[in-house]
Image 1 (cartoon, rainbow, N blue to C red):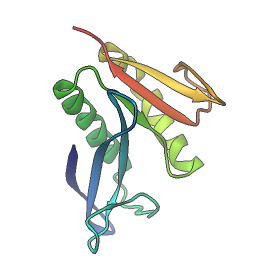
Image 2 (cartoon, rainbow, N blue to C red):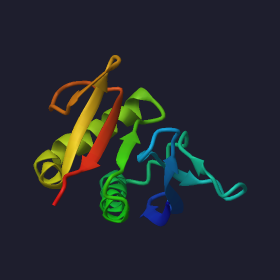
Image 3 (tube, helix red, strand yellow):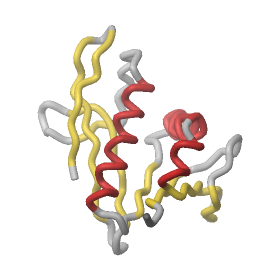
Length: 134
């Protein structure tokens, strides 16, 4: 449920964590992502690293979604940024790769209190993905 990788760039090598946490809903997991706090070993999703490799980092997160849902095919993955800017970054990442993502996943966006099928150019508060049945 935890993946670790290293971001490499102008700020040096920074350990990153991706964690899938169970929620109180069956087969519903929260995706957490951020820098690894070396003191606690936990995710710090408030740090702005600016290491110049955000696309690579998001691609790594996406790869873990594939790995996680391969092991847990009935899971729903919930994700949102720790702030509006990060949520927008995630939306842009989904938008830029939507055709590829939709081959394997159904993607939803949370707008207000309503989940809807993800559409480009719409501002969402959170995202939900589920792997399509093979």
